[in-house]
Picture 1: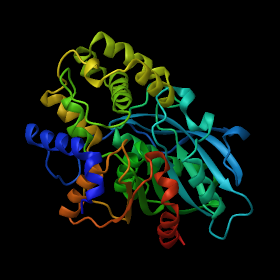
Picture 2 (picture 1 turned 90 degrees about the horizontal axis):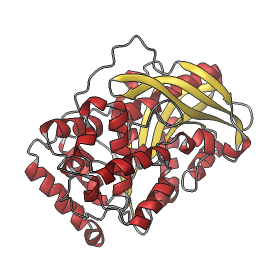
Picture 3 (picture 1 turned 135 degrees about the vertical axis):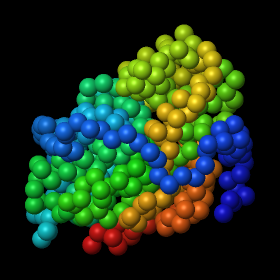
Length: 389
């Protein structure tokens, strides 16, 4: 149900989504998303290396911690490595081992120095991890492939990010064995919420030896595949905070991982310059520079991004599944979020209801994007405890 208080925040986004639907007639509710299958003889989650994490990166309540590097998807159809963190609670493990939460973080950037396994987690994300540890859950947290490992992060490449969040659970089990329970769940904020939709959709088939219990998506962007192809010199300001930075990370990932797409051909000289900056700057620094120089999304492009091939590419990367979830799903969104406006989540919920997908939904008000996870933790803990204990 669309509340009156949320309409003013998202009117521009709703208009843009409707325009996208008119211009892109293939934007329809689908049963899942077709994706190429990586055909290399790889083992998802195979542990490549591990090392003790430094004290600066440790959440309160950590009993043991390792930085791991493991095999996973680089893009939807190419293999690579990802790094990540594994945190165990203090004390002795319970009978059957610690149950596991796989946490997918929000947007931090594309440069290696932005990886949480190197720098730790910031406010809004460290608190939930500490609470899970305090409640007796081990926490694993992927950096995502390309963030802390070779190459550039394939930003919002959902199948890859989802696989990264699943495969680190397998890597942690290889490292710690029976100290961990096979029971696990996935949760994520923002970019990580997008990844969590994909992880939850594919978890039981990707890691069948484990006991997957469900997903918690917090402020996860959806329907972006209808917005990004509209990029071009005439793209209007639609009121999404940070959209220029997100677009730059998407473009940098495509440029690095999918050079055959020739994404530079649609960029202006300024767009190429800022895409290169995005490779080396974390999100906070990039955002400050964008605001200081008042960079507009339309200035990044020399011509429209829209082609049938580009639309197909964004759809392959970003389109969130609307059915096929075989474990419980919880979605959290704030009406006051200007980073991922609530209209995007309403559209996703409508699509899932249309397909008969069951989910729990919590809607908050007066809560910023970055604090949505913390503000909803009591209800999230009830959901997790109910499914995991």
